[in-house]
Length: 94
View 1 (cartoon, rainbow, N blue to C red):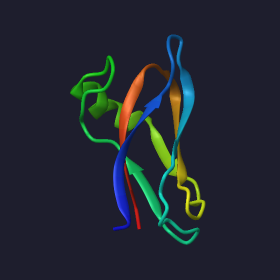
View 2 (view 1 turned 120 degrees about the horizontal axis):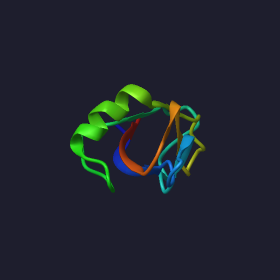
View 3 (view 1 turned 60 degrees about the vertical axis):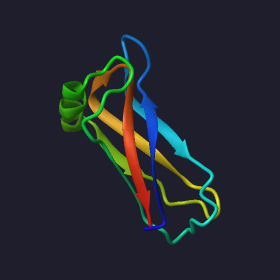
View 4 (view 1 turned 45 degrees about the vertical axis):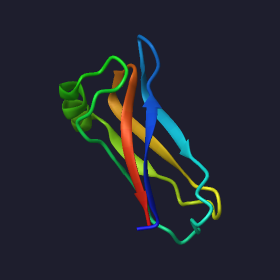
């Protein structure tokens, strides 16, 4: 594995948003041929409980952009529903 970490994604305040994104930067060893992945674990973030995170994972689709060599990648989150607040994301790349 090249690296792993956490980022916080923010859907904003009420009435919320269907989309949010976060840039993962500072990844000097990443290349354009690297693979990146993002996922959620059941953990507290902002006003959201562990149970909120469990269920949010059912409604949030995560994708990562193709990495930018020496820089990082972006995690995009989408939902059919408007969501509010922040959620912790875990990411890895290799």
